Length: 478
Length: 125
Image (cartoon, rainbow over all chains, first blue to last red; front, side, top):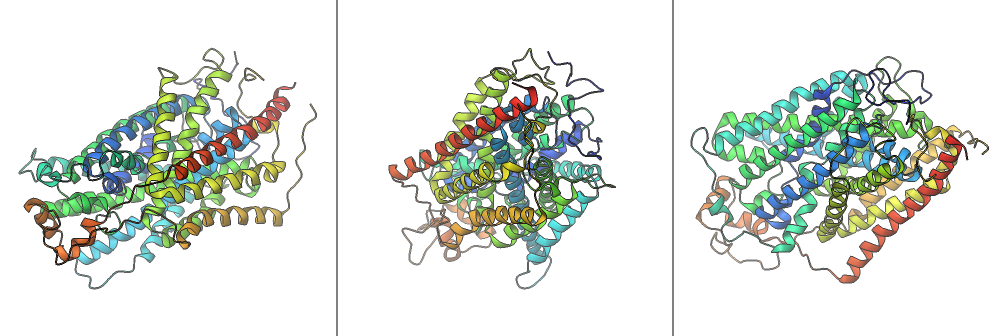
């Protein structure tokens, strides 16, 4: 048994990394919840509706619940491993200690690209929203959205640069507002308060499953968008006061919040908007909750959901910058990427070089690619990461059985969640293949090329034994 | 086991590494778009001339929603009738499966080789 107890208040398993100034430990469970839900809640405000387009409204609901099962498995597995591997980089650091360096490099890239693309998608939506509000308030002609897209990304990057506590406290407030807006819209339009405007039966008539059963499978692709990013809670591991308590609590509370929000969102939007309009997130409904509010006839709801959408995009982009920069920073610190990125700001104690470097990357995607392509890129990176997780937990339990390291949280029914997650990932790969097969192959091709680049070139600059920083015993079987 | 001493990487080499990664990343997303292979293109396979809500298979409730959103049958024509084509060949599906399995096999195999080195240096033989 190791001498280090992850649940100890004085020693939580963070090993030395050779930096003189560490990240600041200031976050509690509510911040973890805000980070997870803040990143993801925007998935209810935009993007999930592409699932309706791929299979119809019922298919999107089924996809919502199957994706909910997938993410529940993700949250359970993640909570156990993260409560033990509490270090910046989240799943990247887990992979480094459990599977191996090349897997870790890939996982780090999954995280960076999933979050950076999500950030880009958020900025696109914020720009769109500003243009709609401009039109509603009397602006004539098409408003140029680009300055607003740039402004969103630059402002949030600056906020992240200045400090994590202010950033995530900001997220906590605007995430709570965005979540409350969904609840108020539901109460106001479903007939619970005032007259309801839901008309599911008439809107679904003749269009129950427009693509048949294969549409349900296809919907699972964008069904992930309801929850994508909840696993980002692990990125704050080095900045929470009590990782063993705060991370499982924040993550599991987050997935419960999202399951409720996703189902309510589907119910409200599909009962008001025709499925063809709802399902086309480019030419139809870019922001479905906002569009639903517009059809409610209530100016108050329009403003509420307008601000809700804006806040959700800002909270998500904010959390994405936080997470992507931590993953990039962690890889730089380990020399998986040039070590220059592994620096902490001497005053703000944030990974400032990683934050600044990822700004132009996000801008390239936000300004240069259509929304569904950006979302698909993000989903694919996320999906590759979810496929890694069952492999990760199976290897973790095999190399360090429960009696060898004390976990902050032990997830039940192992290996059932791992097998379920792996199966659902396989189905989702097929769902992406239906309609977006080229991107899937291009993406995997990218990861194969960078893997070869890492193994045969980059890895020479990496210290071997120094990568293993956890105070754990030697893994079994080695 | 003797400790591995990694070489020091020069600034120019670090810069090149970053550029390589950025180029590969941007290429992975934009090359399929530039080549027009980005998929997911919905198309109208059976257009309707002089469309009405009825000919677009919209009932009264559905038509009312479209009108509230500012659409006419003409402007909603493509939005309503566009569909994905989910037909695929078994060959394409098998190719995708092989690529994914090959990818995971590759990284797990190389990772294991690297991992044994790490554990060996960290904990000794």
